[in-house]
Image 1: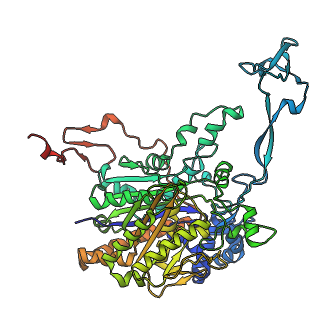
Image 2 (image 1 turned 30 degrees about the horizontal axis):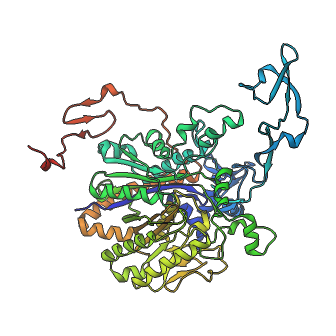
Length: 640
């Protein structure tokens, strides 16, 4: 009997805010929420952005004035809305109008007679360039003549200057929110800072202490699968590593190690969970989150693991990454946005327009983490069930002309996901109570190819008007965590029953196939909560993935059929206490205390205390030993 991978917690941060307790989702549908939930959403953002603080049992503005929740929500609503989602790149990343660079000049262009200057002996480069004629002036100073010569390459100099970024919009964490300030970050790259705080959010929101889980299981029953697609690319990691020598600086001891794309997993294991369980990082470009979700799902199903954290983190808002994608004509530049709207100024808030008249995608930063458990353990612990992972399918595109162009593999993943869900739930449920979280990258090529795939699959399965959501219209394209952004939004839909509209649209583009699709700029209020959502992802290089996610209502119904009503009643009693602990963390986070878990060098295992026999390994601090007596799967292939 296969275990069902249920989602028992989720957390993270994106341009829409904090993921846990549906805060980020609520930002995207805020106009459709009751007033109390709107106030809570604005309150959480105002605290994140440093506009208000919680002191001595009350909220205060920066002058010390005491404010009620309603007053905070009213006074800071516009600032909270303006300081979230896709917008102009802020100075905390870099100055988009003055990015440092160098302009190459040849000395023959500077002066036909060469260049003469004096400098300290200590500043002489080693070795001295062959074009330099060096004469001693005194004990401390030399004179240098750089003379151009016909038989030698023309010497070049680099002139420090700056340039204006062609792309100035991105999906960024809320204004004023600094991950590095929440724990001793010690020169951590931004992407790894986000991994720490995102994983902490998921663990804290679970309502079951991580220590309780560790005490109950052996290390091998736990796993963490997380990654970044682009690795870490800021000055504390690979960018600093590659630029240091050219800038006349020294490489640090940490830049190379911090740059690995597996570091999001490594940081979670080493500093957040203290996990000695299974670990891995699968990079599948923009589908990376779903690739890791597939690993977690399969581990739970097979019984190899009982708890798996799955996630991705990406911090790609750097001049170099923007240059790279912009040179590929993949991004929405200021010039393209102005031409698209026939306007003098680009509309940064509407830079990402999936399935509309668009001109490229918009980069974003995000960290998203979910915790999966097998269904039996979740019931035993009383963990809150937010949904379950039915299937994840991945397929490549086959032969291609361009490695970055879309291909046929997405037909396979989406069709298999819909077919699998149909076999479980029936045609009526899929036709009437399902929706799609489209990849929706906001490129002209994607709007045609993906809409065609969605439309043809809908027609094949008898779906008349398939609701299509596109979360990148709100938070941008975060690369590896992009499917995680979709999942976080989906879990919000399962609770609130509102499918976010694609509000950046003027209208659906004429070349979008939509005979069987329902693409709208308006939020869609569902008559019935959807039973299943399909997360679709199309990554560079032919990395296609589609996941089917079941609602908590459908998941609980399946568990009752498996375990019976009495077991579910016992589960509900346990879950009441779990929800209380979980809600207590939510209240704490709304007050600005995010309880970031960061255990640098804490509770390290003394390897001399590991108990080892030929039957088991027992590790201090881990509840159960690791069994070494497993029967070999290939025993029938050798002589006994």
